Length: 442
Ligand SMILES: [Zn+2]
Image (cartoon, rainbow, N blue to C red; front, side):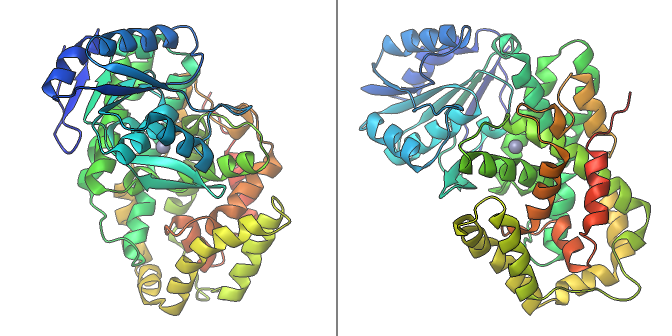
């Protein structure tokens, strides 16, 4: 089976058994000669090593091969400044970049291809994230995770049999990344309503929500096609909007904060999608609560708006728990502070949002797919559903801290920020969410 999705800078997507076999012909079509940088992890695990070897041999028939294997810390590959710089230097002048691996390798190869200004061919080894099909990389800059425009693959090769043979934790992480779309568009909606991001358009997430709705049934027969479709179409939606916003809301922010803390402590963290799945259960619970009663957001006694100084103090306090030196807090406030400054200096849009909350809540109900879907779908795939299930596990205090940090990480406006402005992002609500994080439908 050969299947083509709509164009964009990603021109070719090959999905089917033996998809790797198109490599030689593809390189001819792309008119590539000379040297290929083959990006993969050093000492790949069984299965992945065979895929790397096969790709190497197919590419090696036409081109000279340069292996790029990023340095591996005690907890795997982290795309910090040094790792990225080393990979770019090691690849030097090349004519094409071939990525063989999962999300981190793909994100690194996008940087290498962008720096070299050459085409990227991505061979997907797991259905673990939606990032394969777009030109954005999540990079660690000064200890903070940032989504950075890099290069889109020119071609993406997906063999569902390869994906099915990858460790179960990886496809379970893919399900976690996919279910974010059940609630993430609500944050995108609020960002528009609060005057931050005018690009909101259901055309970018409704098809992904429809694909994710198929995932529950697909779990029973281990149907990888449904998962591939949900993740690939999701990645294309991100490429089309030039922003992760439709598919990445507060649940993703939780995952990024967990990563940042782990990086700061030189500690391990679980897969992106596993963390996002647990975060999706939390934010589905928040939306179940908010949709139940408009009074959970709007206040009869008027918004109890914090001052910029209050917020800066809260931000400083929250980050000091991780970095008493204050560096992480200062770097985060440099970004998140701009969001707070702009919303407090001109609160017109937020005031209108709160005044028309009943109407907005009805629109948000339409935007949100199904608040029961994240938990049910994760359970169907045997995926972790709570932060306590992750490896390493987060205890309730850690989850509580992550939730308190959310308003002070980045400049994208979310439901959490709205609740901060109405004085509702308080210990009671955070405790409620910590309890909900352990939910089970069984
Ligand atoms: Zn994601």
